[in-house]
Amino acid sequence: MLDVLKGPVQAVQGFFELTGRAIRNVIAKPLYLNDIFLQMDSIGVGSIPIVLLTGTFTGGIMALQLGRELQQYGQTDQTGTAVSIILVRELGPVLTAVMMAGRNSSGIASELGSMKVTEQIDAMRALGTDPVKKLVTPRMLATNIMLPCLTVIDDFIGMVGGWVIGMIVYNLQSLRYWTTTWQALGWSDVVQGLLKPFVFSFVISLVGCYFGLNTTGGTQGVGRSTTQAVVVAAVSIFVIDLFLGKIFVSGQRGL
Amino acid sequence: MNPPSGNAGAPLLEFDRVTVRFTDVVALEDVSFRIRPGETRILMGAAGSGKTVLLKTAMGLDRAASGRVVLMGEDITRRPETELFDLRSKVGMLFQESALFDSMTIAQNVAYPLLNQKAIKMEREKMEPAVRDSLRFVELEQTMERYPSELSGGMRRRVAIARAVVTKPPLLLYDSPTAGLDPITAHTIMALIIKERDVDNTTAVVVTYRYQDGNLVANFRYNPNSGRLDPVGSQGTNTIFMVLRDGRLAFEGAQAELEASSDPYIRKFVKRPERDAA
Ligand SMILES: Nc1ncnc2c1ncn2[C@@H]1O[C@H](COP(=O)(O)OP(=O)(O)OP(=O)(O)O)[C@@H](O)[C@H]1O
Ligand SMILES: [Mg+2]
Image (cartoon, rainbow over all chains, first blue to last red; front, side, top):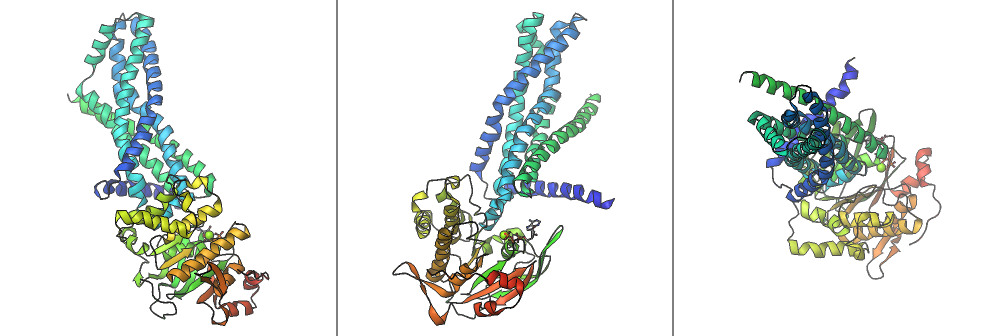
């Protein structure tokens, strides 16, 4: 029984050790600025197309479904309110994070995994660099910065998607849609909508790095750690989202 | 920096009853030896016998579960990773799969230790000539701006040798420099290793399956005038052979003793009749 638990417990321990080292290296010199910018480009800028696509369609489909429901109560012009609250609080952060897990946790895991199995990680250690500082910290920081930005883009483009569908299908007035959308949002929604991606960004980058750096067993092993990284990152995002949601909901009840 | 060969000074590398374990295998068991400055060690052994692990343990890349590893007078067995970087800059390692960084050009690969090893204090202006020299040493100066994926396996090995020697470390560890190469390329690479030994007086450990590699190192010397290898005759070189079997040191001694051994496992490595000349 204890033997069955040993593997996962060690993995969790290893993950938090890596997290600690990656965060400590943020303040330790040298900070590899070049690597951070490179990663911001590949992780962040490279993800914009996928965010634009998923954002437009989720916004559109939400407006379509919610609009019909609201029509029954004669409240079609509240579509903007519903779309914006759901997007900013929940769907924007979670969907963006899950898409990023699919694209970047896997990318990071396979890149570091190939470096591990071809001894490039060992070579780095032999040649004077700490792989955590050189590879993990830049990826973490780049994701920390880019995921909240991408989430804002996703939220906004989702609202645009909702607006287009609202106009075409339910003949919503543009001004009415955007006013309700804007007025629906309170400070706590904005805080929640930015705090979540910040937390998720640690999961996406560090889970990818952890599985990459712990790859064994040649090229086959790289495939395995890539898959594991995506699954673990995506599931963790949903679990953490529930906990964060709980904190925010109970926080608001007092107001 | 480089002690003259034959100096019976303090060992550069010492293993004292070292055992290395991974989750389900014992990779090295109770291995002891001392390498003195100026020696070249030929390390042989079957696949999986622990040759790579031995080299990595010598640099603290793999860690001993018990015993002591002393590198250049410092006990590294339980030193934290961050304290090892300065010591590692005095050791050059050729990895089995070359381990060049895919994302960097050949020149950037060779410059990497100069830029990243804090103990190496070289002015920026001197780096480019050092990189060029090192690549000229392996006769690949023309590939500076290319990427590792554009080179053949033998060329990658040579670039990796250039990267290992660019900082002029006193100790070099070569992991299977000739594995998987055709005989001509393999000979070129062994000639480079001998040249490095004779030009810079380095101490080295060379992992190989091929007995002729060891024979070449033990009996030939680089001639700087002709650029070829000449037989050394009776004076010999400071070469010692080691054979690993399942993580244990099965043999340590001179070439004559190795050839005289009656152990069937050891004989398998010696039975290579073709003594090709340089
Ligand atoms: N990081 C590791 N994790 C788990 N086991 C390992 C690791 N590194 C090496 N081993 C095991 O240690 C043993 C010795 O491996 P090593 O790589 O030293 O062999 P080798 O003598 O270099 O073989 P080859 O000639 O094939 O390169 C093998 O059983 C190997 O599976
Ligand atoms: Mg090996």
